[in-house]
Image 1 (tube, rainbow, N blue to C red):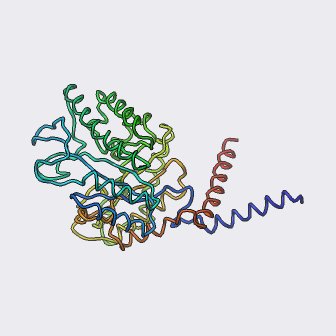
Image 2: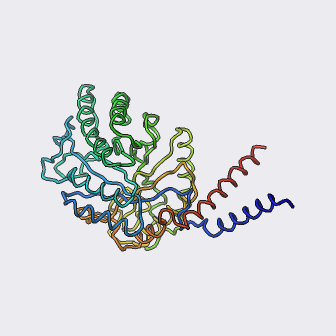
Image 3: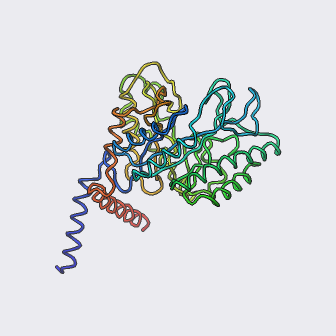
Length: 387
């Protein structure tokens, strides 16, 4: 045997050994999507509290964070106005841009990867979220143009702030399906994207709803990534009912067809996908309707933990088509009444924190070798099937 063959054989044995030791659904590998948490607050909290929330997230080991800010869309109780403002006429608060900027700076100081996701909330008497932003639309083209003029100003401000602070990704909207799917609005979206790119150098995406919006958005080709609010219904209410149900295996199986369809869509669009939001409440039946904040009055923390574990298991080694998953949402004052919030020290927090390795760690480097082997196996299998 030649020396070169010995080296190749030993190298292959080493990679196989490392892959066997690190190809683990509960350990981050180079072919897995990055994971992080979203930080949001429905109150005007000081910068110090935002910075503390970022620090707590970093302390558990998570290195990816999304910050949500928002402004308000005029609404008279029946019709949507064309103006977007920083104030709510019913007394509801929002984070200041200064507080969001301080949070971004803290995250960057800690070496974290940052996404900025500016929301639009309807200025309704029932409070933030009482009227869904996805319902905003205009039948008159002049009103449509006026709305985009106001929205463009909002996004210009966010893009300028994002660029000045080294934000890695900017979302240009979230769940605005009344406007994203309006054919008369497509030219406005394209102009908006062009305006943003003139002042912001990072990646651009849009956060589309999971059930009928994402696969009809007409401007994906103008963006870098396809964002999906991934609240896919995985099981029936009956299967999800009862403490600890469904099992991790059942939920991971429920993800299989969803992920297969998403991968095909990613390939067709020539764009990677990110889960701009995905999360589960602590209430029973949350996996049957993840988008519903009140599926039950009965707590089921085991189901919530199973949901997080199943998602990470199901997306193991998915490859480059699925880039990131942002969990809704992290521990933050002003959001602590939310059924979705993952508190510091909770089991989901500890699980996700333990899943993400330190940058440059031996674990990540070894898992990279394992991922190389998996990629080689996939390419070899494809070559064999094509023969």
